[in-house]
Length: 290
Image (tube, rainbow, N blue to C red):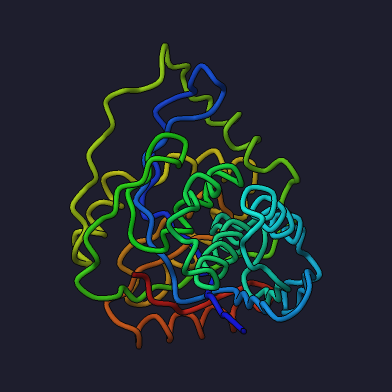
């Protein structure tokens, strides 16, 4: 049996960091949506264990390790699960702030869950996702979510009234191996005396105007420190802001991928075409966010 799952790019509309917890992790609050741009994960339950990676970003990928870890975790915890071979078509840039590796692992979990309907209720899918990485639980949910804690506390948000037209841009710059750690060190978040017990409430973001307002009010706390670590982020944001019809811009995750929101798909497509012409080395995708 062949089961295909899209590993959609994760986009942080907002991302606030309240401080560093006593356990060393950072407490955050983030509204997450998912883009139409995606890797493609295929599970073949009729073949023995194997992982094969193709696609434009396959040569830069190190996340087959995460897929391998996902399969081994499932096998060790639930030996009765039917697994198989995994094929990954890697279309999203790596280390990009859009959850590519986490989305791939989450897509494997969803594919295995579909392949084993009789065992779905017996497996703690969220708990397994949380052991694999901070972004894997929200990528497993694969829907608009308010994410708090260290990314492990999820609150499903109402779906957007309609998909939002946007452009994602990654400058294809060299990303430091410890990028996220560098960004958080540069942020210098305050130490929290204890783990936060009062979780913030999610902003209301049903329409494009409400999304734009929330981005303007809340933004991404990691954008400024990430720009210190990777100055090209400022160029990406400036290029997006200069495109006709751009309503707002922001960086996703710890960068360097940034996004701009437009009123409609035609405006987003025109902006993407213009940016590709001006910056041939950048990864540019017109997408919908939902």
